[in-house]
Image (cartoon, rainbow over all chains, first blue to last red; front, side, top):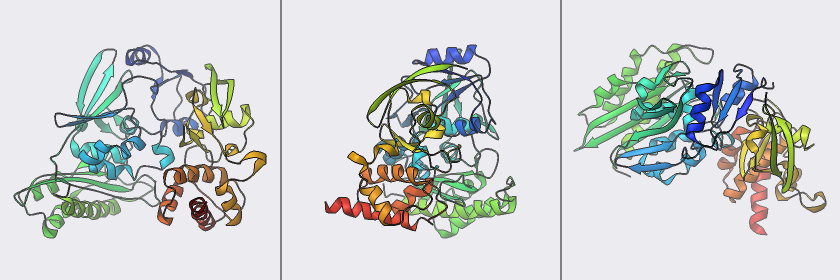
Length: 287
Length: 159
């Protein structure tokens, strides 16, 4: 189908963009458009105004400083996939990016767009959950930082108000030599996953100092498997410890929809957590 | 409903037209510029038939409004053949390896593989298949398309 009529705005500065969002009614932000435009074509979304951020200065790029990786919200997934900083400092995101849609959509889809769209099965929100990323949000009223745990508000819902724009994502880096693993299950390559697991582990003196396990496709927002994380703390990261952490997924109460029932998602959560942790264990100390 | 003057370059030729904001790049190319080689299949970014290159990168022309292409360089399937309509290496390989049957998906397949072979001139079969996950073909079973891509890579390497 074709989208319903709307007015298009292409501001060049953040102040101009937030000004438009603050003054217009029934307005949406256009980032890469790879989720919003299909919804507009289906007329699930009908807006009076679109504010395109493509020409707004300062919203793209990756920087590393003071132990924080900062990604401009309009940085496209394809650029992140080939970013040397992402590869070096955040291999978990590099692994997750390969599962997002297809090259044609990654060329335009942005990290900010992925987060605000907030599909429960999406990869980048799961990575942000694993890191407990900080989301930087701007409006004409000022800027604020929101922890990812507070940002993800529910099924395709976030803490972003209608007059606000996500401007950057800040990830607190894990030390060099940490392990990472990302596994998901989708029926076809490039589809949204039925479930996925993003994990980080830090091992010192042969035992797990801390672990982060984030699952997508299980609840209406990405969830942390805190029981599994706690089970790993202080343990040697061997097959027995990994299995013990993964089985804690059995206590999850997953969502059920036409793609998969709760039992199947619970099973996937356990299996994918185990695989992701196994990969993470093999990578500890290798980069 | 806003209308915008749009200046862009398609296959090296400059165009200036006006279009409503809601007109997708795919419809703009087909209806305003008469370049009907870019096919419109699903209109929600799944089938890949409308794939074009925007500043050298593949994108779904159905998931982009023409007004967003302001000042950009677009390459469509019409831009692939040489002088007098001579098929390029990839197109010739599709012809020789049964890379198409009905032809509906072919423009998108060609544009996706044009980007792949430019960035990775000697891809493995797995890499070709991975690149093609974003393009649906309901006739060929993909075998001929994959064979054509690999043959085009070989031909380019040998010449």
